[in-house]
Length: 199
Image (cartoon, rainbow, N blue to C red; front, top):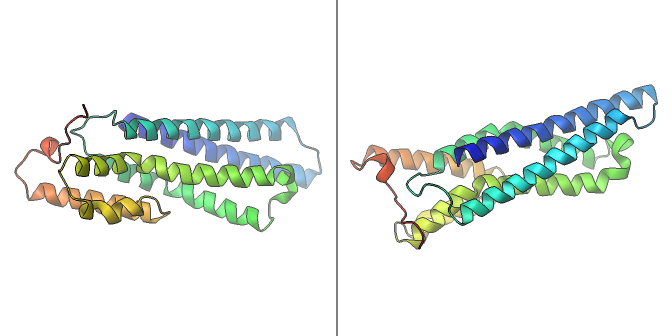
């Protein structure tokens, strides 16, 4: 689970850096009045390539979380919180770029690709939020399924994981509550909230 999350973070930031590189190349071309160069094509290719790879990786993470291919003893709240906090700059830059694109600031160098860029950006961003929430969602669902918790314990947190910004707050709150519970229990941490493996 941890390695999957780290790899996902790296892929997402490579996607972001490729986008920034594409913007820089486009700005230079606009200033010099040159036509679309191989550099522009290359940076756009990298952006799309890393973006698609990130989307595939995120989908695989979601499926693995869904079928629970991770240690059932391991609570995912900590790694999920760290991942979401690490990706805050990624989401902020994505939001800024989306706003600038919507007001036509970058139309001069991506005009032929505006619709593709907007759709791709929105899907990748929301998909990223769901993918980074998947282990928490799976853990909460299975804790209810196996009778460790009641739905009212998780209902609000479950819903918040599907909402931008609120998902980060929810992940922090879940981890804080989990650590607080550990402090008041004598059961070893690795045994807490154990969810029996699916048959």
